[in-house]
Image 1 (spheres, rainbow, N blue to C red):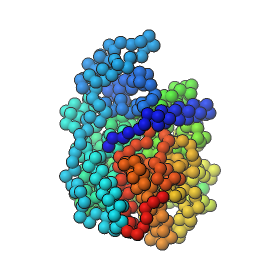
Image 2: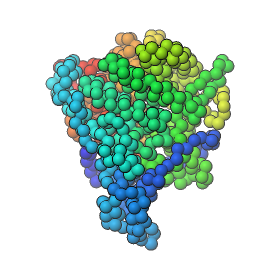
Image 3: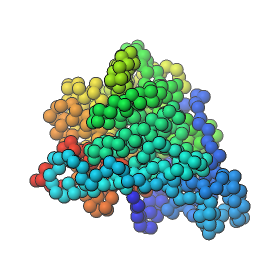
Image 4: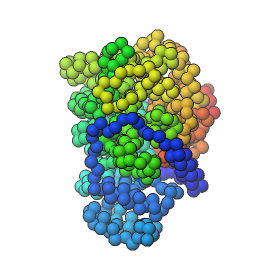
Length: 589
């Protein structure tokens, strides 16, 4: 989908970003007490190195206004890299080394394709304008008409990788994939890992099972090639993953379609992905207060340079660090925050809201470990379905150990929430648990374990957690806030995000408690309402929403608000399928 921003609104966004940048740089402190600990770094490619030089040249030529660095690393080459580089080197330059705007424009037109040109539109063969059995309990005529418009957006977001990428992969940062894809929208022109889970939930509501299965096939192909699912299907994402939800995608498709072949095909890839998440870079050993040893996991990207898609901003922040090693560690923290999906949030800052104190690798995150618990349970289930009882038993044991670890390290009895845990020196082989290292700040992620069966099936626990969520300050008029801190970062207050709404609502629902169901319905109704009002005002579905103000989309962060939008569409359709919308229920702020 196209997006239109007014010139003045965009200038205001850039101005806010620059002010935020200068304020955080003024208060810089050390990122973390940790060193690199011999962590792996994924090598870059000659193509990426060139595109980053092009990106810097474009920034100097065109200026900050309306500049998105990701555009330049998404551009495919029309000729071999050596030819393109040669022409780039021969561009006339001013005394200060810059290239004139018109010269650069001519070069771009002659030697590079447009960002996104290597994806082609695809009409999904399983799309039906109004599928049989679509949202049967949505009786309100306006809401039903809107739901059909959201359903039709799958056509707008469906793509396939062009044959040119397969033929000449060395000219593209886009990676070849075997199946059709559904992109999130706007600047996100490739398939993304954790977004795909909620896209698939929406596709299932839309009865588009083949399109959902094709997404999983693509992600499996990435595991087979790289050993893990990449953050997104671009060459510059090969250094990190994203929240591990592939097994959850397979589970939802199997639960709906009974596709046993998909389960059998996915199991080797899921075992491989599990090894990646339990490798040394992600694994942390904790000795708890009772003297028991637990293994948990953290985000830790294999990268210590500016992210190619955001290198202008990354270098600006890192410029405040004096040593190369400090800069490298900061770049690793940035990429690791991107691996978390929460890019960016005070959740990862040692001294919030100071952006330069990002220390993502020093955090053992509640939600990541809940996702891995889900992966263990899903692998056990798939192995049993496939007749591999020994693997099933092993993963049930792993899930039981992780449940105990989650309760021991994260659970806070006073707050009745699970809290992220801060590591001291990340290079220690065994970390001794200390009470003061739990992050006492309230984030929506503190409640994500409720999405997993071992927790939502514990009735007395759910009762306490429901009360804690109700009084946490997170539940607002238009959904659940990401945090209580208004930092200017997009994964903070007042923004609400579709995946967080869905995980909390579904966990509450699955508990079976009436009080939990009431809270779930309240959150879902507020979320659907704000999505509806914003759509009516703008004609677009948005990436994030302002939960403090019903009918407003979200802001903040390092890029302008995006539209499309994969996971927002998926969660709206999933909520409407679950709760319906009676004819006599108003939909207004």
